[in-house]
Length: 181
Image (cartoon, rainbow, N blue to C red; front, side):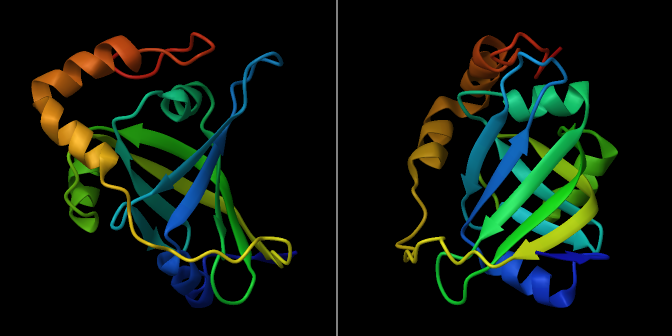
């Protein structure tokens, strides 16, 4: 494993080539559940600068990341090379969830593709950057993005998504406040 002072140009190029990334967060409670979420879709992740990354938070079945960020801010984002030379990059830091109408959301929104169902942007202030070998990560090829989430969100419409978020994304599985509270 190698520690880096920041997200270097080499690491940025690697990150921007990946089709999937993983986000890990946890509540403070010892009996709380650690959350690990796969993320993807082209145009949903951005390296803002050497110490800041952000990703588009799309409406989904849970809101664990948002709840954990609201409680304590701890987050790790991980990228794995499934194609080409092996590599794993981890970005540790503190994150926050910003929503449409907030200045930070509005200033970052243009960095991302237009996907239906956007409920916010997760911004991470990165304080630890590392990469490691990834020798055991399997080789897999990317066939393309799934369109199920964007299709689902597009069919619901904004009013349907607001209702969904109010009923399914208000709290985490541990009962922490997430969206809309």
